[in-house]
Image (tube, rainbow, N blue to C red; front, side):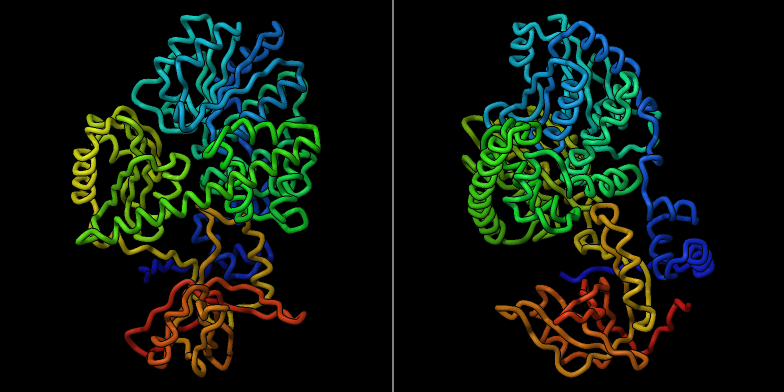
Amino acid sequence: MRKKWRLPEPDPDRAKQIALDLHIHPVLAQILLHRGIQDSADARAFLHPSLKDLHSPFLLKDMDRAVARLRLALARAEKILLYGDYDVDGICGAALLWLLLKELGGKPISYFPHRLREGYGMKEEVIRWAGKEKIGLIVAIDLGITAHSEVECARSLGIDVIVCDHHLPGEKLPAALAILNPQQADCPYPFKSLAAVAVVFKLCQALGEAMGKSDYVNQHLDLLALGTIADVVPLRGENRVFARLGLAVLQRSQKVGIHALLELAGLSRSPLGAGQVAFILAPRLNAAGRMKEADLAFQLLVTESPSQAHRLACILEELNRDRQAIERAVMEETTRMVEAQARLPKAICLWGDGWHLGVVGIVASRLVETYYRPAAIISLIGGMGRGSARSIPGFPIHRALEECSDLLEGFGGHSFAAGFTIDKEAVPSFVERFQEVADSSLSEEDFLPALSIDGEVSLGDLSVELVMQMKEMEPYGVGNPEPTLACQGLQVMKYPRCVGENGEHVKLKVRRDGKVMEAIGFGMGHLQGELEGSPTLIDLAFCPAINTYRGKASLQLRIKDLRFPPTQKLAPSRFTR
């Protein structure tokens, strides 16, 4: 799928100043400028994140009330229920608070809803069970911001509730004792994009400070990194601090469960990046809640028994394999349904009987990746449908569901991901309405993915030194993707050739101003014929990388996209050293 390029307006003077102040390559300085980093101080903080850069946890609205209530619960030796969501964010947040409360002599109890039996969110039956168990305080983690009736039920039973959430609140908030959520309209916390595990981390910071354990929570940055990266929040601001520093702790984690997870995933001796967390570790932890019980992943993170850790890690490994098989089957079925339609709609909305609820969200994401348009997938079980929706820029999925709210039993989420429940009889009307909303708000231009270019360069601007310096921008992820550069007017050398076991990749050499460099397009083998018959020059968007072959390191351009310029005019280099 070709993309529309978004090229930045260069600011060579400011880039030069940042480069001089920080002793970095001017291309890297331009990349930072394009990412919204406007001066040397901000650039230094971005490249060298520190815990000192974090805001005070007491800037979160209701933090004082939450800390005071937890201290009272500890003093009274009350039972504290940690009611966590069944995904990695909620599980890691619950584990983080559980470990601190145990260290402080508390009596925490964990509970995670069953995805298939209960679905997302708090349930009154669990609240009433908590009342029978004489639980005095509930801390809701990664859920609770819309749990009005459940919080009222808790209050009627004499149970206080602290909500630690990051999902968008409605017009009215539940009547909890304290709500920690930076998304609240009147919350003064400066950084609004925290994952739920980070909200819990802030609570632990504040409680630890109040209880003389201010440094204890920093031992659990591994959990913070796991939850933050897995929840796909923007890796900017405080999230960048959490991910960067937390990955280092994760690599050498003292938790036997994390060690067992890394061993079985084949990552115990490999450098860990955000990609390994997002695509290897997180799916294994998520498999517990998707396929069986989220408590399996929670127990893995908090256990001190190596044998139990190994057993639980093996269970998660098997559950993840089962999840992959089911996901493939549902993906094949939904793809056939899409391809069978006379035309591709602006929004994909499909339903089927008994699709596994643990994979519908993943399948919706895969369909968005494949067709680049919003997708909602509904699994019908009995008389009810449970749906997951994912979206593209320009179509806030939560707002789209609001326009269909009269047809839904309930819904929640944010701009790019949401979940909902619906009566089976209302599904056809929902599909029609959902697609009407898409038809009225999306244009054909919205279906052309944008490729954000961080800077235009000449081949002569590229060096191993630049690539090594760019590594300081890691970890990459949402909000901080791997830098993409563009070079215009490159001459294709010889004939491009297909490489890989099935010829799925294309490799070529390009030249400009006497400098020759190798480029490779992974999964772009289909472009070979087009390149052979191309004009003399091409424009290339790429990520510069270091390729090591037989002990020798060389620069290689990993192609993101290419286009054929309308003229054969060479563009001047924008960078000089």
